[in-house]
Image (cartoon, rainbow, N blue to C red; front, side, top):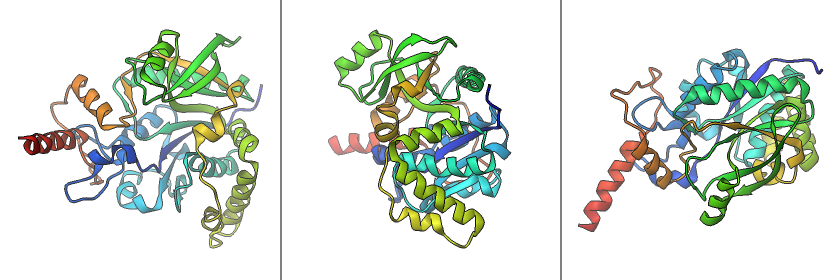
Length: 327
């Protein structure tokens, strides 16, 4: 059995949320990335992701990766985290690089770390259901030194805009093998996949940090080497700005397409019962969620004053404008 390091929650909060831009653009014209918006009038989705992380570990082992140009939205929301746990990307080089950079910092501090990748822009109605599956996945890691675990959500509807995991047989420890990944299939294919037991891919990953790094190394070894050298240089000489310089040369690398796809044998999937999960990825998906999720009686805004929009208010505002335009 491998030695166990600390459980690190890595909150992924550097995305732009471009598919939802029609809803996340304020009346002033400012585009607010989805993770800094709320569904109704409560805290932003980023805050909910941080609370999700707190069910697994404490703030000392919670990291967030963010974009430098989003500072006005994240600096107050992430104030409870140690400053060294906030990893700021100088520019967007794709989701894979956005995971790799904080992963390397975590490994320097804790070579035996166990990591949980938590997207910061998801809605979960029944958090306890997801939390139970996360705990179950973490319990399996000591005997899975070469594998990463994905959480696959039992679908609640047919959605051709999501990614699907096609599971195989259970292995000796009860997790499901991964036969293949299917990204955004046509409606009929998505319906067929669900009928065959496919799960929504929430891209919540639970893995040993070293095992996760090896998945990157197998596909983008030169990028890993360049980033390892840059992180080491900045840790030894903080004024070197080696990571910023490295980012100027990095390609754009997508975690789903360039790292995960083709490495199915390195993954297992834990099936999460229906829990009201949504990635709120498109205006239509937001509208669907608003139809089935009751609005809370009162909102609870963050005292920190972090700027965010209400997706519900934006949806209703655009609906009124469209109605007026068609009148």
